[in-house]
Image (cartoon, rainbow, N blue to C red; front, side, top):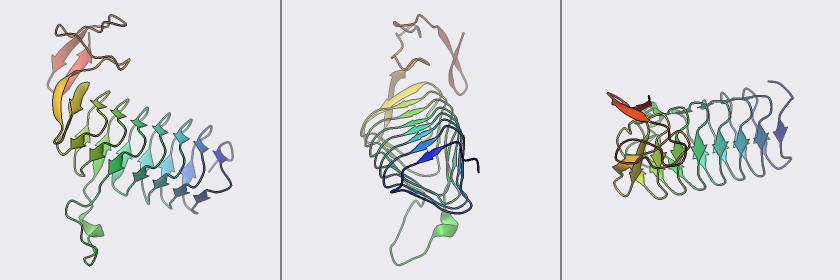
Length: 187
């Protein structure tokens, strides 16, 4: 573990956790053993990560988020304030089920809006955009815009985060997209 990162004095980093250069961990956080956090990430207040979580480079995790065992965030993922990950599909307080962790993968550049819930065992596609408060219980395609409970796709978003037109063009940056088997890709 390098020493070229910042951890606020009120936060804890367990032995065996690795934090990349340029990453900032703010107030009242706990980074558990086995967790790997990439470079230039921003970890907001009251965030718990791990154990054994993988977080890519340039991720931003806003305040009041818990990233549980089984979750992988690729590079450039944004986790909005108070959003929720699960890792056991049917938890019970009196029955230990840590052997039933269902992995969740959030791919490069995806945005998870404030207060959304990501039910375990799914993949969120590259540059997908999950609206605030959505409850996501199935895979999300690359560049898909999903909202609601349960989450449903209502459109597509550009790399820049703007909603695409019906012709799959960004009204802000004029980027054009085409459909693929896994969502959209830039032309």
